[in-house]
Image (cartoon, rainbow, N blue to C red; front, top):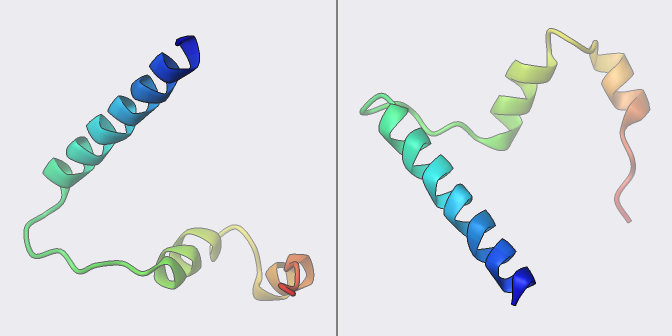
Length: 59
């Protein structure tokens, strides 16, 4: 029963976070893809060569 309560708490937190994010978005703002976010966020911190060197190949 305790585990089930934890699951519901996490779900509620996720819903609250989503609602807060949704209300904070500017109307008409473009949808940002993961690739765009990664390039924007990671770009200033890691040079392209370093990112490529750390990339784990998917099998």
